[in-house]
Image (cartoon, rainbow, N blue to C red; front, side, top):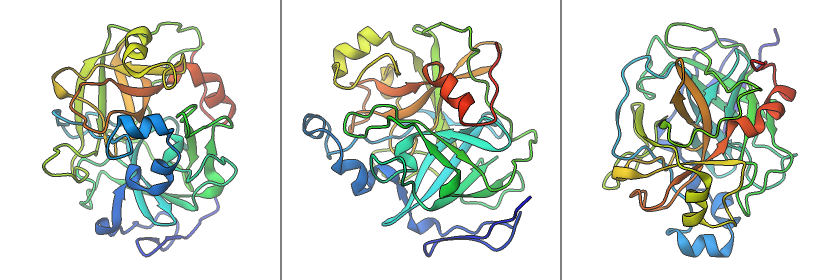
Length: 304
């Protein structure tokens, strides 16, 4: 296996293969605060969400117990203007699944960011926990959907191949994705979103610990009635914001799962309302819509 050393601008250093990656957390920011995201939103979108970009966080949720979400990843991306934090999920020992805007600074999917670090097995991301694995990735391992479009937030999905394989443990396991034959839309299921996003508007910074919140999955018709056809299509799946429980800043790219003989990932956090008060649904990329693309661009093999 080829061992790579990666240095992320002023912040992240991996001295050798399998070495611990040190992180200056004071330089890590929610990726949604970066200009590349705000600058490419449609004018109507900028007017409808203030301050000019969809935020992402698990709001009004609760702290996860250690190992409750063994597929959760904290994904740090090295952008030109800083280090952005997102969510992602483990799908195989070599690949994690995330949102395209977490690893691209424009609509051009031929030009990804230079690299980053994926953190698996974390309960508290800023501590050097024995359960954690921190593995680097480079631009060559980033595969974005070829039709990704940040202007209308279409095909906001990407795969990241890590520089070395993940070692599965009781705290680190792959998530289940829908089978090829699974045609369910999941409306009415209870969806659970998890991540290290901002959890309190009075304390607007990413959470040190992993949080989660649960709310019903909506029909696309009900979601479209609130967001409009400019942003909601068959590729999307939406979750109600009942009780103010919602995904927002820094949860981008992370999972929404439903319970179906265990956790089944049905969505990838894409966007939501800036207020994160539950008045508008949170919107995800629908995993089953992209199953064939995921299989074609990774070593993941779906169930029949």
